Length: 138
Image (tube, rainbow, N blue to C red):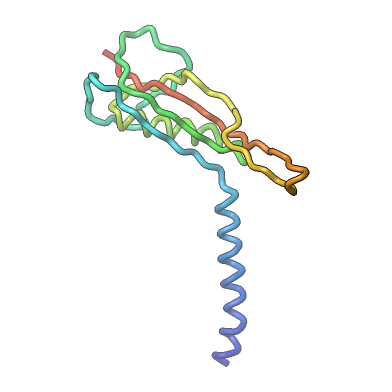
């Protein structure tokens, strides 16, 4: 009986592993890169839940702490809440009270070539590029 059940179990485990790999490869991605400015105060990290995401620079006096660059997939696209949460988390590491989005576009980020040598096609891969400036109110 033991041999019979292991023969049935192995293909099921292989199928489950393959399905999980395929599911993970189709997930939306959000990657971030943070750069702190040189010569600026470096306050202690803040709570990500307290960081505001703004689309215009506030009129309140502030100091710019650094930049956050976000690369996000387009197909499938992550929910905007996930992109904003990544902005908040990265800005919080810089000690920011808010992050001001200054650039948000979908643009070609890569290309690949398909077809035979005599009939090539160049296909582009679209991605979302977003840039935010982390600020701390004075």
